[in-house]
Image 1 (cartoon, rainbow, N blue to C red):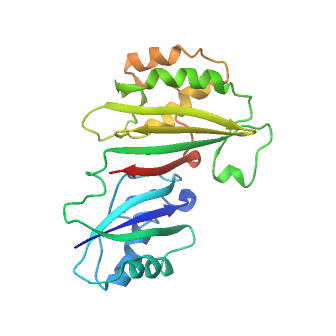
Image 2 (tube, rainbow, N blue to C red):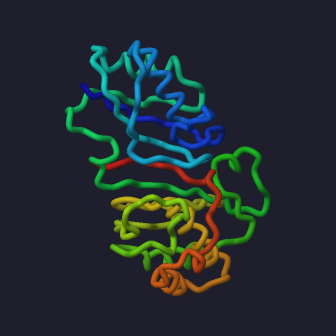
Length: 244
């Protein structure tokens, strides 16, 4: 049988999602250890979207296979007892045998948080990007709309990306501001490695007035990573959810 769970984590003290041969602390490592204790056998989990070191998740979706019969609440509450403070299961349920957390997802959504204030925060700084210069959010929103739809996103693709194709479809991308907090909300059928962070780094250049909004269209058309902005820091990025 297959069990699926929703996972929430603060990625600050993790070396990303994926299990590493070195045994360093990753989200997958601690999740598998917790579930293995409940199952009484080694568990290997699969996720809807791997996250890098320092990146957070509001509702990562995972699944694993087992022949052990447990109530959903046993996986949920029993798993949480065995998890560290910075990762948590938020739901658990049995799913069909053909379910796959990664391959069945038709879209994914991310948030990126920016703390736009002259003075940095010792608390918020762990959960968002600090940008001391005043940002023009209207200009950033205008620039972001050039990325809507189906495009070759090679200009926003990380060098270690293993995706077979750079062509992805962004369903929506928008920025909102609440006092000093700026939130980028983006949904696409799939994302390239560092794609969201590279988009943020590019939009920041527009927000600072270093480039005009129309420049983003030129960056996209170039298909060259060197033409886009720097990769934004990981602590502002949140995997929000996967859609099935």
